[in-house]
Image (tube, rainbow, N blue to C red):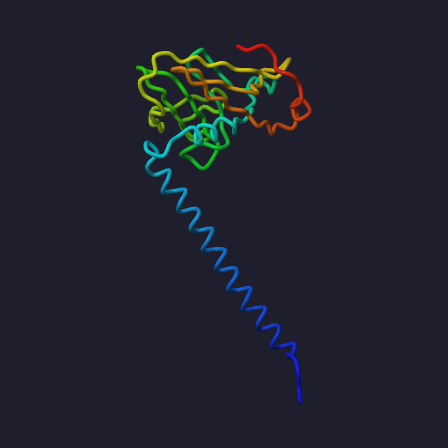
Length: 187
């Protein structure tokens, strides 16, 4: 009398389990991708601090002027930067956050297109724009940089007795050692 399984039976059962698990994982990943697209398809209702935090924390230190300077522009009421984690697009984009007519507006354009000048990037006319916050009287943007660099470490948006703080996660190899440096003065 035989007890146990043959090698062929074990191999067939392992093969079937592998096929079932791979199809289940593919379906789960497909479902997650579809949920992301649903949230992005109605960005005026879905945008929040978290989306903005996602975009700002993914700031990419895009080299300009012979790799001695990085693209990041700021004033007291706007910032323009390159992000690897844009809200709408699936690839590196240029983003701008500004106050216009008492509205906090986020704009985004893909970085690598035929119309974009990659040496001097800017928000294009056919960009994606969204109103993040309405009825803002005054916006003040405060930026803390790493010492002796023009690389931002922390961005604060101050408006209507509220403060939104965004920490930038640097993945730039040259400056990984400087992540533990103290803040320089605010700009």
